[in-house]
Length: 421
Image (cartoon, rainbow, N blue to C red; front, side):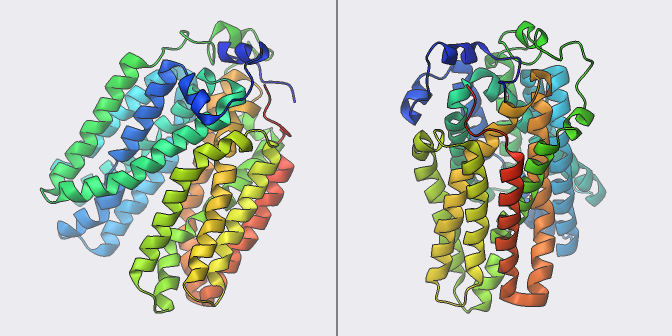
């Protein structure tokens, strides 16, 4: 497939011989705005506490567990809506403006949770916070793609995931410490972090037109320019990308089962809760320690292979949890599931930006990926717990089947044998 039009100045560097490089060289040579963006993404994840403590906060206020669960569901629905809308806003307003506005308004919404007590108002704020907190994701990924050489996009995507994973590991610990003061302290610090990210984005990230990308003269000059505003209808005509999105949705449904039914499985086998904590910690530690260094080799493999094989391995690893064996099976399954995540995730993040047929559609392709992933994470727990309720440990076979189906969809849908330069 031909390289999408709207190539950045970084893409021209590749044509001049700037070949793929290892992680350390890639990070050293990244443009300053990319470094700022990566740091902002990590800081935002580290300071995101609302979803973690929302249920505890509402029950602390006297609401029932079911009411608190409803609020968390509403937050998840808002997250899906926000990722979908984020792609459209990025194309219309530019990545920098979208990131700054979403973080500013997210700070206001999360701060409102700290001072509002009415349940209806808290539901509205939960939806707003979910939508606004996630609306920046397509914009950040789009800007990352526009500023990074295509041959190094997989490694840069892995660096972004590293920041988010470190933030996810540190954030809950910071939140628990803040909780020793009050819930208000938790949510106000969350709001303050969002406001800091908004200010950093506004002053440190390039405006539309300051770099060659969506909306730039280079992009406008390519094929398809002047064909009207980009629409999601254009994306729906890309049948192979729809297969990729279906594979992503199935992968997300399988992956979220480590949060929804794995604790139930460990408890049913009479094992201590510490085993679950160790399994989750092992997943995070492996991703943080291994993923970025391995991209030196992963980025040289065909994208179809890394994405499809990684999804298959992820589902198969989760499927191992259903084997009646000692607690070692949970650690073996975690290593396999995490290996699938490490192999596939950086390429999955990079793929929409490299396959979008025009630069103006890039943010919508990225937004569609984020939306399908968020939808799988939102729907997956209901599917998994229902299956577990009826068939017990056999529910883990569902993850293996989902991984196999995702492999087929990804193999048929991913266009690139190799990452195009």
